[in-house]
Length: 274
Image (cartoon, rainbow, N blue to C red; front, side, top):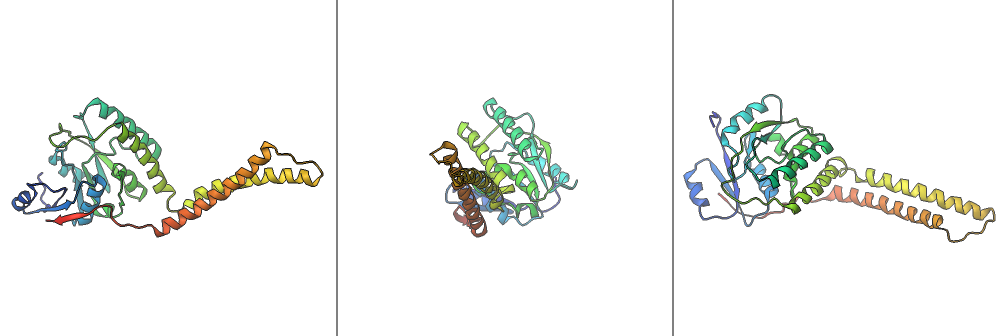
């Protein structure tokens, strides 16, 4: 790559026959071996925890990214960015993957305000302080630029080369596409609401309660004035709104309790470290 700084390589993998041999032949390689495949978020999380440098580079193991891009990515960081994401040019993927990916990136960019073209590019450069703030689980790795942005870091992108896939098999499909949008909603919740869930659910609950109470009080006043009360849909609707309002407020309090006591235990098991 032409870099003068020392390079500390970390490989996160599942058990393979060649792993120990590769570790013996590569002095600066450290390997973290999972007991099974826990997904990309888990792999990135454990790799970030093990990283010791001031700059962290991530690359996928399918060799579609080019290591020659590492130097330019680091140079881009010096322009004032905290995270630089690759933007794959001339993607070597089938149209069934590229079209949904473009749609997904456009929607994500519009909803989050993070103006990147390729959120989920595996080739990224981070300042070390960025990776220490990331709490990845599930498939939230696809939204790392969004999470970094909401933590106050400056995020940018750089055009990168994209090679045909040499190893591994893509897991992209209709189900994964749908999961991506559900994860986007989760990210919106985590970045804007999760720290104070009572603000959201409490407002909804108070609104429902006030509207329901107003309807119920109106009918009660008619009863005080001597009007007969029959079972009317509006009266039933008011009572339901009051109940819903109380439930939403209760959900908000439960969310506050969960947010204050949530566990950060890892959702993976490490077999060995080399």
